[in-house]
Image (cartoon, rainbow, N blue to C red; front, top):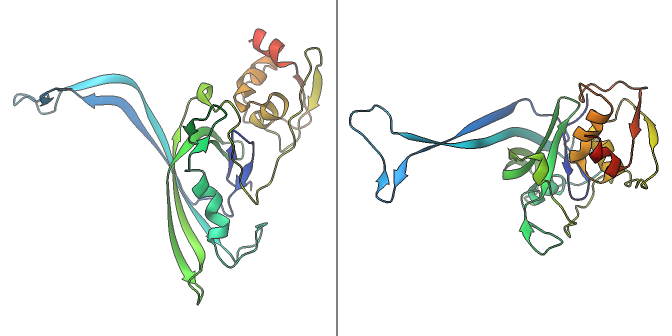
Length: 239
C-alpha cells in the first residue's frame, strides 16, 4: 500500500508519513454568513433563524491523524527523539519568503496513491507525545493536521528561499525546448502531477496534460501506455 505523502509545491520535495491514517475527515463550509450592519446582526422575532447572506465560494478542509514512533522501521532518519521525524510537518505551517520578498505559507499537495491529490495549505498542526526517555525525549507522537484546499491557479509562483532537511529529493526537472516532443511510457508509479512538475515545473499543468492526451481518468493511468509530452507553449495553445 502506498503511504500518504505531502509534496511541497515550491521545491517538489516529498515528505512521506510513517503510517497511513486510520481515518480522514473531509469538511466543507458553504459561503454563507449571517447578515449584519454597523449596528450588529440582523435579527427578527418573527423568524426562527437569522437572515443569511450568500457570499459564494466556501472552504474545504481535510483533517487527518498520523502516528510516528522511533521504533517503527522504514524511516531514513534514525533518532531516539520522535520530534526529529515530525519537524518537517511543523515547518509546513511556517511562512516562507517568496522571490518577491513576501511572507507566504508553503503550498502543498496531499497525495495518497491515485485516490487523493489535493492542493492546499496547512492550517494547524497539533502533536501529543508519549513514551518518554529518562531525559524527557518523546519516542512516540500522535499528530493531527488540518489542511485547507486551495485552487489550482493560485499555487505558488517564484522560488521561496526554503528547504527541508532529511527528505527525498525527486528527479530533477527536465526542460523541453520549443520544438522538442517526448513520448513517455507510463510506469505503475507515475502520476500526472509528478510528470507535469518534472517536465514543466508546474504541477497544475496535469489538467492540460490529461486533456491533450485524452485521459478521462487521471487517477487510473495504465502502465505501459505512451503519452506525449509536448512543449509547454504548444500545450497551452491546444487546450
